[in-house]
Amino acid sequence: MKVESFVKIINSDFYAGVPDSQLKALCNFLISTYGINGKNHVIAANEGNAVGLAAGYHLATNKVPVVYMQNSGEGNIINPLASLLNDKVYGIPCIFVIGWRGEPGVHDEPQHIFQGEVTCKLLEVMDVDYMVISKDTTEAELRAKKEFFDQLLSQGKQVGFVIKKGALEYGGKVNYSNNNTMLREEIIKHITDVSGKDPIVSTTGKASRELFEIRESSKQTHGYDFLTVGSMGHSSSIALEIAIQKPDKKVWIIDGDGAALMHLGAMAVLAAYKPTNIVHIIINNGSHETVGGQPTVMSKVNVIKVAQGFGYSSAVSVDNFENLDRELLKARNAKELTLIEVKCAIGARDDLGRPTTTAKENKEAFMKQLQE
Image 1 (tube, one colour):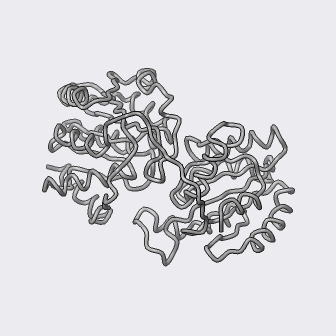
Image 2 (cartoon, rainbow, N blue to C red):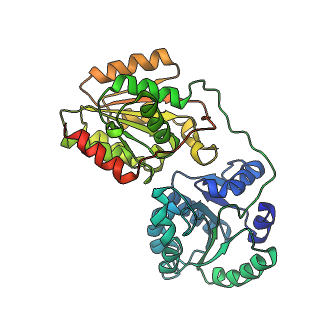
């Protein structure tokens, strides 16, 4: 189905959400049509944030908003859905558009398998009626379902459209780019050159995939790295407790701007404990590149002032390899909580692979290496 038809039938002029590769057609259409102007479209920090924005839109306009997300974001909406939107509370209508990663019977990465199994079950538990959209869904079927959904929405209920892979199409093209010159894979290679045998906790998406391939090409053990292939935004929390429990080890965090933004409060907790053995690196390309390159607000955020405000002992920003290498060496030798923001270009190799080991194999190798 063409995304233009989908949007016309949905009939809302406000969208908030977190981009997803399964919803790339919708995301690109929204960027092309509205940009991220705030009045019609907001790319949120996380899915719960999107629900709050949607509630505000309804309160101000009495219209029905749309919140879009990957199904991994369902967990982030459960609290505001149950305690804010639900018709037993404020009765705020909302349409959810959910990309179905890990759909049963469709091959996907390990972090999506269980989430895919419970995607529709979670909607049922949360009293959200839904329709699954596939390549075969017709406009007439969608229109008929939307008419039924309109009755529920008028009662202050919420409804959902679960989008299968390839169900939405968009012929337009959007070029996502910035003015930065450093490529993320090269940045990560410079990090591993300095970190040596120190443990690294890397964020979800292409950063972990690139780290895995760097170890492969260098014939190094993958036991140095914990690849946080799921649970976006939680890498720094994982690393914090590792650092506390292993004070004799320098722990490196390879974070992304979208991931750091998603649960920014984790930085405040990290800074409050001030572990002297953590180097927190945020590779900032101002985009959700792994799912298509859609922008985050982090290109407009002064990350250094944020880190300093939270209480990081040292925080610097770099935009070239000479300064990066200098700050990496300085951080390795320092005995203080350090943050390095690295300004990064958007883009990755077309032939970038995925880890060939399982998540459990990665965990076991990492835990074994930590004991040495």
